[in-house]
Every structure is written in structure tokens, then in C-alpha cells.
Length: 110
Image 1 (spheres, helix red, strand yellow):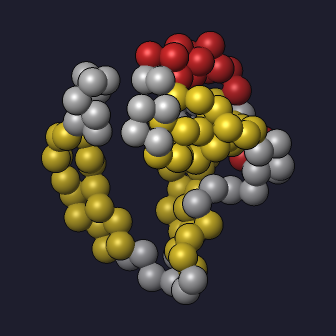
Image 2 (image 1 turned 60 degrees about the vertical axis):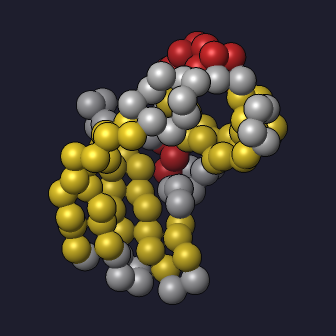
């Protein structure tokens, strides 16, 4: 694994006003994993495989045990799809984000 620290700032969308700060670029070899941990000690794993990535922990077990649910969403304006992992305790905040950014939930993966 190679970690390159970064502090690059960018706007994913001009309309949203959100600024994202990229903190690092992590280069993984096959079968290496990184674990992201939030302030409540909920974990989110990403594993590099020879064929691509396990982008989320198991949806019906580990992700659920770490207070997250997954959905496929579509940005209505530019017709792009995303896979979101949503903290169960933050669904009201999530719904406000969807409305503000004109995003529609296509399917909950539970």
C-alpha cells in the first residue's frame, strides 16, 4: 500500500456549493483493505481485488452492524447514478441532501 497525502479542494457540482477536501490517495495491491472509521467507531471497508473492488462491506451484515444501509440513487439533472451508504441515524439529513441536490433513490439494497 502506498499513501500520498493530499489537501486538494474541489467542487463536485457548481450548483451545490459543497467543497470537498481530498486528504489522501491510497494505492492498494490485490487483497489489501482499508478501513474507514467515523467518530462513532462505525467501520467501512474497501478491499482491492484482482478484478476490481469490494466497494462496501457485506450489505446485510457488517454494513448493517455499523449502522449503514445502501441505496442506488440517480441525479435527476445530469442523469448519473451513484451507490450511497447512509447512516441509519442520519436519514432525515440524508433526505434533505437528496431534495437539495435533486437526487432520487432508485432502490434500497437491504
